[in-house]
Image (cartoon, rainbow, N blue to C red):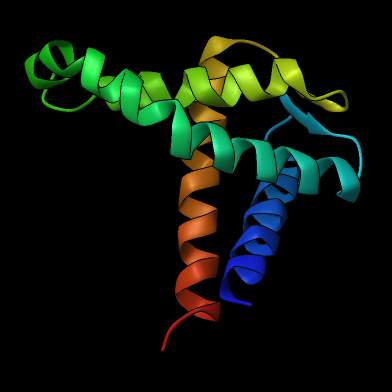
Length: 113
């Protein structure tokens, strides 16, 4: 049940990002649900490998390169899902950052114990 609620929170956060940023577009709620699911899977499976491979650069930039990795993941999912579009790389970095903040805030409000 908690996993389903987290998925819905992430879909709502993705839908909110599309309203707050003109460069990120989500066509409908169904697309937001699918994109949130794929984004969760990509972040769970591919992101740790990329973080490990880019560890020297991440350490050199004091962790700021993680923003680039998050943007790349956001942009990759947008290119895979029809109806979910991101205008460019820096829009993807900003969208990923805003998505993280909104989903964290919603999770803190709704999933607190």
